[in-house]
Image (cartoon, rainbow, N blue to C red):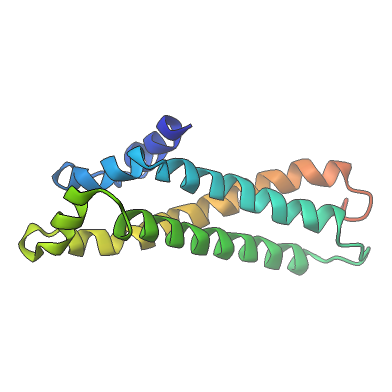
Amino acid sequence: MNDLFATIYESLFNLYDPQFGLIFNTLYDSGGYTLLGLTFVLVPLILFAAFYYLWKSPYGKFRHWFLWLIIASLLTGGISWGISNNEIFLSNNQDLIDALAYPESGYEEFAKTLPFEYALFNGLLGIVVGFIYSLILKQFSKIQIHLPF
């Protein structure tokens, strides 16, 4: 799974910069990509399963569903920011710690932008995945069968 998610982030979203490869190697070696990937897959699934199967109000409107989608996106982004921030700045990789501590290397400045970028991309992926989960889960719901659309 680590390879799949690393490919998504490094190639598809073009986050990889070979000049700062130590950061990306650390994320890969520590399993950070797997944690980030599971975040955008599982958080919307759990939230939309709760929306379709635990929320018993038959009067759910499109705005309720849309708010739930925004909450799923924000929560996914927030968790992703925390994961990537911890994986980079609280790493056990001594080489990365040294590179971050050396101001002329540019590692710290580059590394400070990465958690936000991972959070942004995961938040957007959370919206897409959440919408797909909605289309699937509404078919099996007995209450919210009319949402979305």
